[in-house]
Image (tube, rainbow, N blue to C red; front, side, top):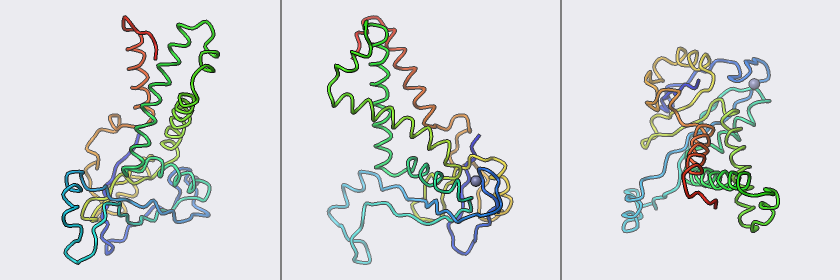
Length: 230
Ligand SMILES: [Zn+2]
């Protein structure tokens, strides 16, 4: 079960962390991992209007890119690298959102084709081999991408969800509930009690849940009358 905590980004409120790895509990050989919270880009309608006045009140050009702030988290060396890579794959910026969306769509296509090949073709492997290189590339992207996203969700034990627009607070997701409770107790004035996402833990979307829903939708469609494969 995951725990979402909103933390203050006010530099005067120094965050206190439990001195152990949130994944394995190791207390020796900890390193400071920067999970770095990024601010979400402004909505599209704001960006469209910005082209008329690209300079802000200080005379410098506005950027539509992400801004981020460091959040140092203690973690053992063995798990810091995978936590960082997993957090990168699940990071909430627009580019990675698009990549994940492409994985889910292509996974649906792969699932649809696989069901069709197994149920309707005498030789499913030959059916795969006969596909164009573009389709095979998409299928490979779907399979590798889906596996990578599920892996990322399993190894990112502390990851940022978002940085608010004023850069005053950030939301973090903890996979270790006991660790999150300790962290909250150690920072009573720098954390918010309410879950940051506002969703019950079992309702929070994860890659495995989204992929499962895509698979169920494809199976349901494949049972509909008139299904003839991709
Ligand atoms: Zn560890």
